[in-house]
Each structure stands twice: as C-alpha cells, then as structure tokens.
Image (cartoon, rainbow, N blue to C red; front, side):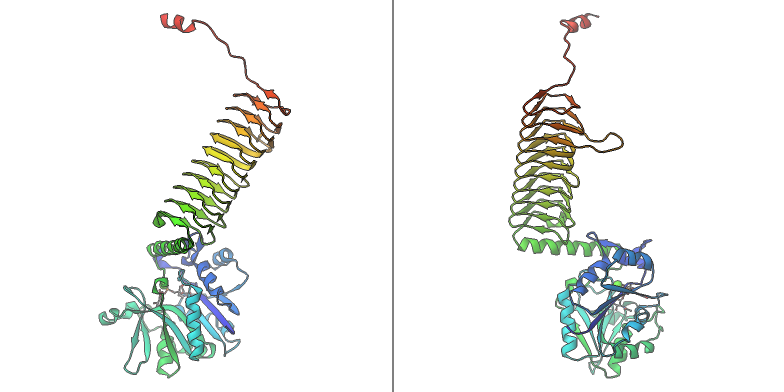
Length: 458
Ligand code: UD1
Ligand code: CA
C-alpha cells in the first residue's frame, strides 16, 4: 500500500481506569495495550507511525521504546480532534497522502481488518473512510446516524437521544483521511458539546455535509472491536486475546482441556499432539515440541522444550532448555540456564540453576543443583545439595558420567566427582573424588546396647 501514515491517539489518561498509570500502559497478556495496536498497524507496512502522547508521556515513550514509532505531544487533553491537531506538522508534509487515525485502546484489532478498511478507502478514492461495527450492546460507543440523503454523522453516547441510543451501528474509532481534507476540517470542529471537548467524530458530519466523499466500512469482525475504558473491559479484552491464541493453536493440533484457565503468550509456539491441562501458563518466547504433556499449573517462561517431554504439576521453568523425552516434576523449579539433556528425569522438589544435566541422569527428590555440570547416567540421591556459594562467590560442581551420589550428600564446590565414582549417603564432600572410587565422610555410628531399656525404668 502506497504512502500511508499512521496516527495512534494515546494521550488520554483513562480516568475510568482509576489508576496512577495511563490507560495505554496497562497490560494485556504481558504487553501494554498500546503495544498490541502498534503490532497490528505495523502489518500495514506504513511509511511512518506517530503516537500522540500527553499524560505520562515520558513513561509511555520509555516503555514502548520502538524504533519505528515517532511521538508527538498533545499538551492538554482537549479531545480526539485536538489530539490529531497536535500532529499537524506531520500531517501537512504531503497533502495527498492518506492518514490512518486510530484510538490507542483497541488491542484486539487485527492487521487484516485495517487492510480491508484502507483498501476500501483507496478503491473509492474517498476523503474519509471510517470503520463501524454492528454491535449487540454498543453502550459507550458513538452511533452512526444517516439522514434521508444518506449523509452520515456520529453522535456520542452522552449526546444521544433515547431513540439514537437504540442504534446498533457504532463508531469504532478508526478513520482514514486524505491529509488535505483532514487539515481543512480540523479548524471547523468546535467543543460545543456536553464534554466540552473537540470530537474527531464531528469531522464525519462536516465532510459529509460539504459533499466530500465519506465512506463507511462496516467490519465483518465486530468481536475485535472493544474500546477498553475500564479494568473490567481490560480483563475481558485480555480473555478474548487469550482464547484467540488458544483457538489458533487448537486448530494446529494441540489439545487444551480448559482454554478458560490457560494462558499462552502471543509469541509461544507449541508442536502437534501436545496436551495442555488446566491452569497452565506459558510466557515469553517459549517453544514447545511435539507430543508433550503439560500438567496442571505448570508455569514456563522463555524456554525451549523438545519433543515428547512430560512436565508434571506445579513445575516452574525459566529460561531453560529441555531436550526430547525428559520428565520433570511435579513441583520442580528450573531456574535460568538449566539444560536437561535427552531422557533425563527431574522429580519432586528439585531445584536447578545454571546446570547442565546429562542424558538419562536422574534427580528424583528434594535436591538443589546450582552451577553444576552433570554427565550421563548419573544418579543424584534424594536430598543432595551442591553448596555452590561461599558467601562471596559461586563455585562449580562437576559430576562425571555414571557417578552415583547417595542420599543426603553435600557437595562443597568447587569439587569434582570422577566417572563412575560412588558417594556414600550423608557425606559432606569437600575434596575431588577420583573415577571409580568410593567416598564416604560421616561419623561412625555409635550403638549402646539396652540403652532404651534403662531409660524406660527411670
Ligand atoms: C471515542 C469516539 C467514539 C467511539 C469510541 C470507540 C470520539 C469523540 N469518540 O470515544 O465515537 O465510539 O472512541 O472506542 O472520538 N485521546 C487523546 N487525547 C484526547 C482524548 C483522547 O489522545 O484529548 C485518546 C485516548 O488516549 C484514547 C483515544 O483517544 O486512546 C479515544 O479516547 P476515549 O476517551 O477512549 O474515547 P471514547 O470516549 O471511547
Ligand atoms: Ca475508548
């Protein structure tokens, strides 16, 4: 599409949010509301994207931080037409170009829907084309009113008569203007209305009455149209985004037993025939392979999971790499930079950090492995702990292939356990153990015969 300039209106505070933060920075599924709309408009390949900021403009600039976006400043929030006026210098660079103006509180909108609107505008060579939606309940939205000659205007909810409020066709808050026509119209908009604001929606009536070409594009996807004004609307928009992602994955062959309770981030990928139980949360740039099982309440962030992996209940995984056919959990915690090699097993209440855990190795119960390198087919007994921190520095533990670590062992790092070595249960290991050796370090057991009998007589 040739020379399209985009203006996102995001200067308002969002009074109905009752928040110290501006509305457009409130998050849906881990991303600020404004980022969702910027993501969709970037699908139009625009020449330039401007965001009108006002309330908390520095915070908005900092959090959005995108190279493809320029910010313009609206000093006082005097209404949507005044917000457009703030970008006057950007609009007037080329009076022939088209300019897409879009409210910043439309996180569900898809690029395809915007493309269809712009397509109609170009085809019909309009001065203004704006989007409408037929809604079950249009409360809060401006309504479209056509006169006998077919000329259209928008009446805001608060200005509408009871009869007008019954109209189901609502203004969405997305407009494509010819830049020249827009600049001529803005000065004609007054603030003579109930809110005392300059309404951009008045441009529709002004252009229409002047006989300019005004087109209405009624979207076929009204479910994308929300104008998030309060936190309950934010929650319901977030729910729709969540279900949209899950539906897409379900269509690609992934089973979700309870989509309502499941949270899958926008950038997450999951392979075919994987199964997702209730209350699973997967965030960030996580990739999950084929035929995996994610049990209830599993939480995964920014991780890479291979094929055929079983992750049991209430396991937390952060920035880790898990190879094929691994079994993890229940109640395991894999902290950043953990690598579980093929076929390994990590069980109940095991925590790992910066640890490479070798092929077919097992750590079944109640262990902590930090800053460790563990070879193949190693057995880590219940309650084994790497003492990796001396109060100042972290130290490394190396356990070579085939080693057997008994239960309740403390490995005081830096320390190395050689290939096929054995460590007796309950040992505190402070020195390297050579391959094939047995190391035991515990005080010998004392026994006092009949001690119990004597005690009972006392
Ligand atoms: C607006 C429309 C209404 C439409 C609805 C769709 C107007 C007058 N009304 O109403 O017809 O049905 O959107 O959701 O436009 N903003 C600024 N500067 C301002 C005021 C607002 O940048 O001075 C921004 C806000 O940050 C927001 C957007 O403009 O992102 C829309 O403002 P909002 O107050 O949500 O408008 P609505 O009352 O919802
Ligand atoms: Ca709104």
